Length: 340
Ligand code: F6R
View 1 (cartoon, rainbow, N blue to C red):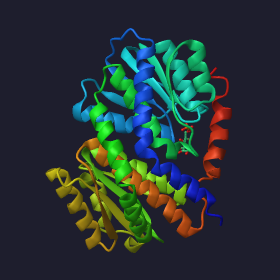
View 2: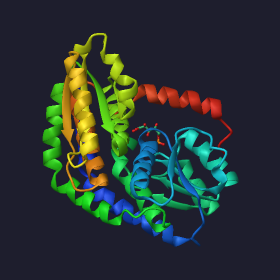
View 3: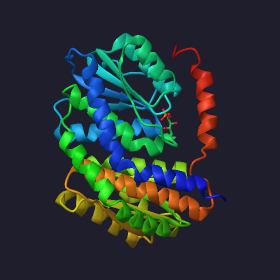
View 4: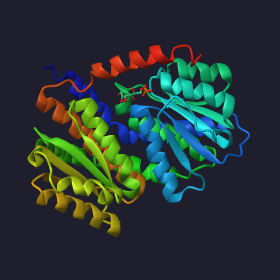
């Protein structure tokens, strides 16, 4: 297999430090172009896959330090209470039918609407409708555009007075750039450990999106089954699966460790000890940095890079996603006509 696409993706991941800050600036500027600030009760981020996940990260930040809640909708509908909300439709391609549907519904229902996209139909509609939009950088795939999409969204939310992230973004951006080599070394180690195993990612509290994102990266890039688990909930159900596990040696459980968070780090350690005692392998990704955003971005970069290294080791192309293409065609024909 050619390693060309591996290199294309690797380069895109390694640009995250720079792109996070640039995109944040774009988001900030976009928020200031129009606007009359609006009175909103909540933010709904609509998006799928590599785009929708940035809503989960923003929701985590808002949960930890925001003044209004941020929810993520990964579907083609909006909740019945959307009338009080700002809806931000996020789609890297701008052509995802579920997100386009959300956008159209938001135009009818929501208090305010904004768009984060690199192009496509969504950006075109936002321009036509005079909607606030952030145009993000081009990238080989949505999942490699993570820093641009998240930066754009956070800039927008900062500018609209929803969430203050400027300092954290600057710090995370510098950390990702200065520690890129370190992240690659961690990723190589992780990819080696994951070989021929099914990775299960477990994170605690505010770090839950990290487990989902890592699972998605291994699904899409490495083309392996992978699962996400979240603590403390895991202790009330998932833990019991390790009483009589099927083929435990097939699994590697990867925990994310924030050493400063005493409760969460103890819970993650407890979970890893539990599964290790049942015959599964375990590994801990220590989260580098001094803020929630930096730690989340660090873990995201390490697992993203690990997923493409693991793809290379398996001899699969990390960029091509034929099953997602097939799914997109199927859902497009089902929802055809509803998004225009
Ligand atoms: C592709 C990827 C997918 C897409 C999803 C939605 O890299 O990660 O999960 O993100 O199919 O498409 P977009 O992001 O273009 O709205």
